[in-house]
Length: 169
Ligand code: FES
Picture 1 (cartoon, rainbow, N blue to C red):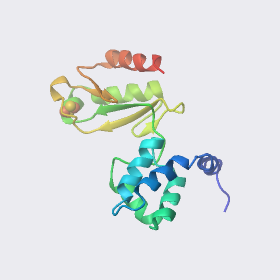
Picture 2 (cartoon, rainbow, N blue to C red):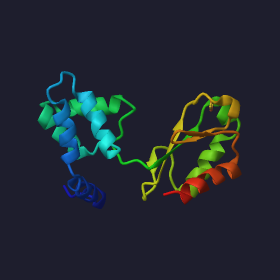
Picture 3 (tube, rainbow, N blue to C red):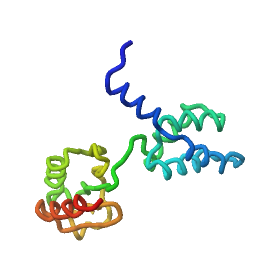
């Protein structure tokens, strides 16, 4: 079977992962019972996501099946298998925001940054996520950029928010 260029690229990227940080995390929890979750959380904290190479390393060092690790990773929404942007833009698609034009905000974001739900820009600056109600319906439509909330938005106001983050490192 021949591999696609994308698969080869992914493998090359995986080979470049420095496993020292992951080994350090595993060392820390090695003798603890129920150590899989803290190990995975620690690895994600170090790398910003769970690189595939660290899954294999964890399986080997904790003596668990990789399938068991993937089970945990897919069950818990907190884990990410791909690199994510420095700025996570969450566009609320809950009912109140939807009624007030969240769909247009999503489309505008996609048009401007070229990323839809769960996608990341190539420069790893932005990740877009469409989420359910974030509890700020009184300010609908709402987006969050990391921990900051921006409400009562229209396309123009959202553009200004994105401009602000584009200008930051
Ligand atoms: S529906 Fe968007 S904050 Fe509640």
